[in-house]
Image (cartoon, rainbow, N blue to C red):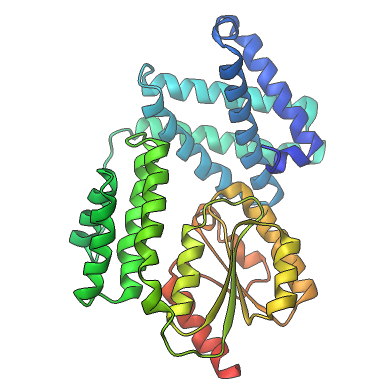
Length: 356
């Protein structure tokens, strides 16, 4: 957990320790029941909560913690089937109340009002999620619904051969490779994430789905790399300690397919490594991906450093974490934000290719 923002901030580390100790003191029976492993897990959970709170505070974006509170409640309900939804809500509200109380002793005075607003909003949306239990969420029909369901079903029954075969068949059927990536594969992986979130699949199954999808897409490289070159170069990376790299990998692939040369740095890339790669490769565009909201601060730092040292380079940002914000990228010095890799490639062609 040393890569988390909270570990670098003594103020919030003190808060984390205080909340953890007070939770144990407030429930003596729980304190007795927890073994060392369970106690460590509980402490890590508190760190995670405080880390997202810290991110929302430092980036001055209240939606980050609001979204997280909804996400956390939805996560805990299937994880704790022995508790009613009402009881889980009460436990979370108790936790938030405890955090608020501890803030008075640990947080800087000038931050108290903002943090209290974050905590109050988290409590409000948690109560709303409990009240709205069972409400159906409308999902618009997908463009390739049949193909997406076929591919997802192969993943869920661990049919590696079938998943790889389906992707090749989609190409033979004439489905554009860009649609296979964005409308079929990305949609399938988004649903895999939702299934894990609701504890309908285990984390090992989620990892299997990711690795199998990487294998299935690898067979596209002979097609991708034989496209005519455009003399454009893009550098793609997941910022800081971000380990979710599937989206970034897809961005790099689709740029290659469009004729660009891609420099894909992968997951968990420090800012200094991004900067050194810019010195070596001289890309026209840098695309930064963030999936987990607690890495948004590191992304902002990376953008600031790139702008300072390489003001001529265009910067794009994307990834699920930005969906949890109040369009925070508009406050940064980035050139473009998009959730669709196809749109990013189109923007790059319209904006940069005529200059190359």
